[in-house]
Amino acid sequence: MPPIVDSHLHIWPDDTGQYPRKEVPYPASVELLLEYMAEGGVDHSVFVMSMHYQYDNRILADTLKAHPDKLAGVGVLNPRGQEAADNLEALVAKTDIRGIRIRGTIETDGFCTPETDPLWKKAAELNVPI
Image (tube, rainbow, N blue to C red):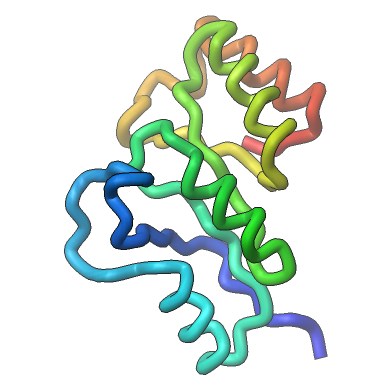
């Protein structure tokens, strides 16, 4: 039987000192996620960075490092300028991300502007889907 994969979820630990974030309405720690995965027979999950962390991917990097057998990840970057390409390269070098998310509702011009060209080019070079 093929593995069961939850393809889009978010987590946020209670540790707001190490991982500052905006308020969230309910708990969603990685431990709770792993418990629910076991209960539901889910083999793997894709952790997608939520807007509660803005562009801070530290929780993603740490969580993927701690649970490489269960979780894959999708990071978030500000898509504008050469800095976006540099940040993507650094993120790929230190994590096992599987893609990058551009938040169309927040970055409404993040898809079709020359300002995002460096990110698209770097993502293609690194084979990282956006």
